Length: 69
Image 1 (cartoon, rainbow, N blue to C red):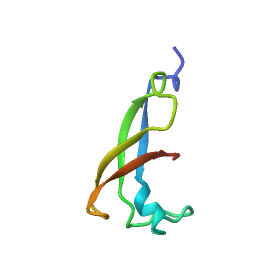
Image 2: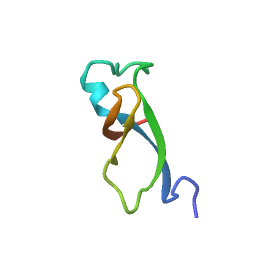
Image 3: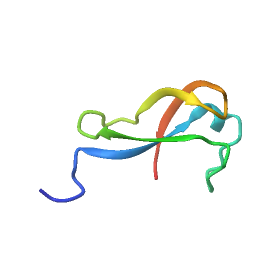
Image 4: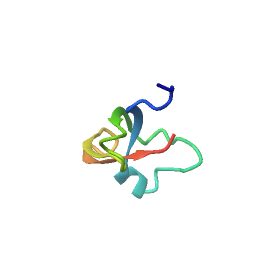
């Protein structure tokens, strides 16, 4: 089996409410944005991953969406 075709890949989840408030800057990583790193199975979940997790910057549970590296 060729490398790079594994089913499990690492994904980065970023808080969507912080991004909507203007804290997120697309060109550089802002220190106010909180991110989680997790894994997903690309064969079972081909779409972008969305999870509700706690954001210490917003002090509440918010939706985290998968971003590109």
